[in-house]
Structures are given as C-alpha cells and as structure tokens.
Image 1: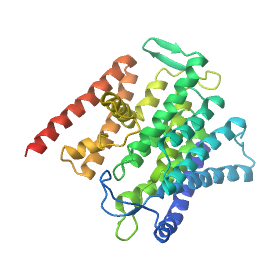
Image 2: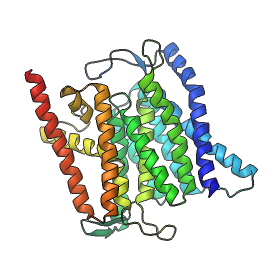
Image 3: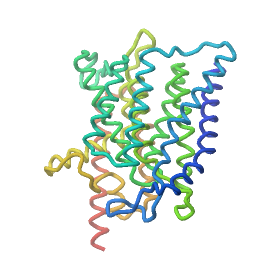
Image 4: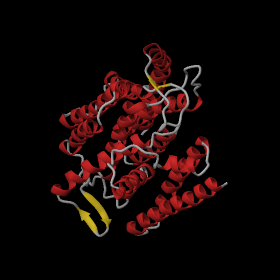
Length: 364
C-alpha cells in the first residue's frame, strides 16, 4: 500500500526536476534558433514566444517512469511486464509526439497530421485497449468488436484534436489536462493500478512546470513558452489512452464499474464538447472542419468581453463543476442519459449567454 503512494510521488518529483532543469535550456535554444510562435491575425498573443515547451513532456515523463522501474529493479520488487501491447502504446506516443515536433518546426498539412493521428489511434485497439461497453448508456451495454474498434479510434482522434485546438490561451489546455490527470490518478489509485498512476503522475509533473512558465513567464525576457503541437498532441493521446483504459470493461482484472464510461467522458468534457460544436458549425456553414477560425470556446469568451485570465478561470471552474456534479449524480444512481443530457443543456445555455453578452458588448 505504501509503495502505491511512494512510486507515483517519485515519478512526479523526478519529472518536475527534469523539466525545471531543461526548460531554461530549451528556451535559450529556441531563442538562438529563432523558433517562435509569431503573432498574426488569428492568434491572441502580441510577442514572439518559443513554441516548443511541450517537447519536454515525453522525455520528462519517460525519465520519471524509468526512475520507478530502476528503483523496482534495485529492490528486487515486482516489475511491470513490458509486452507487445506496451510497445505499441509507447510507439503511438512517440509517433504522435514526432509529428507534433515536425509540425512545430516546419508546419505540416492538416491532412497529413490527421493521417498520422489515425495510425497512432489504431495502436490502442491493436494492443487490446478499446471501449467494449457503454454500461447502459442509451440502453447499450456490450459492444461488438466491429463497433468497438472504430468507436475507439474515433474517440482517440476526438480527444487528440480537442486538446490541440483548445490550446488557444495561456494555461487553458495545460489546466484542463492537469484537472483530468489529477482525477485519473485518484481513480486508478482506487483501483490499485499503480503503473497507470505512475505514468499519470510523471506526466503531471512535467505539465505543472510548463503551466508555470506558460502563465508566469515573461515574453520580453524569453521566460514564457507555448506547448506547441508536440505538447498538445501528446497530451491528447495520453489522456485518450488513460480514458479508454478506465472505460474498458475487463472483469478479469477489475470489477464492473457502471460509471466508467461517464467518468472517462466527464474528465474531457469541455474540450470534446467544444470540438464537436465547432466541427458541426463548420459543416453547417459548408466549410472544411480543418478550416481555422475563431469559434472555439475561449474565442467566444473573449468576444463577449472577458479577459484571457477571466476566460481561463471560468472554463477551468466549469470543467471542475462538471466533474464534481457528474460524480455526485453517479453516486446518486441518476440515469446516465439524463446526466449527459443535462451536460449538453448547460453547455448550450453557456453559449447562448455568451452570445447575448457578446451582442451587448459590441453595441456599447
């Protein structure tokens, strides 16, 4: 029991330490190489800012996890089995991470990025991780493999792009991810899945340091950074991996959990709802879903007159409220369809209020 607490703490501390040590060096490298995210009409920042902060997520997380594995080896403790499925997951993370770095450095067509994301998404069902049960949502329980595999791939693509596209103001993507990682650590800890807790803790350590540099850094002193696609795509893939692991019904290893699918969806509700809303809006307007615009949730708050800091606080508060309320409703055994319906109604009401406030703000 003590090890279930100690190992994640070690992974977290090591990851924090690695990121703290490497971040200033990375920022100097970006400055010398001119690797900046330049201001333009669609972006909200006014200064050139290094865009490779998220490059540290993978190495810091890897070193954090490896430190625990080395400790286990030195103490002759039980080692997690690194089999073919583990190799596929790590390969998927590195593939999505690599395509993010290349996009940050050179810029890649959206179709190419989507194709690579699709390949990485395939790795999850191929390694035996897929959503095989909806736990009674809309009256649906077990899903056949012919449905589970495509549905899982769709969810991975949804989450990866949702995190990527919500990364529009300081602290938003990283803040949402930190909330999700924190709850995943709690949920997997309750299930005694220490290896997943270690992974999530190591990733959280790196993201927390980035969050500090992103929020408190000074652009003029080159101490501020963005995570870039390397960071946002990797975070999205990692969260999709954790969500699908939690949502999968595997009674051979874990007891049946009626709230599994609902909790997995709740932790990513704001970015995923926002992406679906934006994509549907673009389709209705007859434009490509890959067409960049200013219709995401943070843009709507800014258009309504809120500052970036106010927007961040409100969205993170809303995400937290969704998590707490849905958890409570699950404990009260409220029908999952009713819970999701309430979530959607609240989300739509939010945008109705934002629209009214935007009109009032423009008319002043």
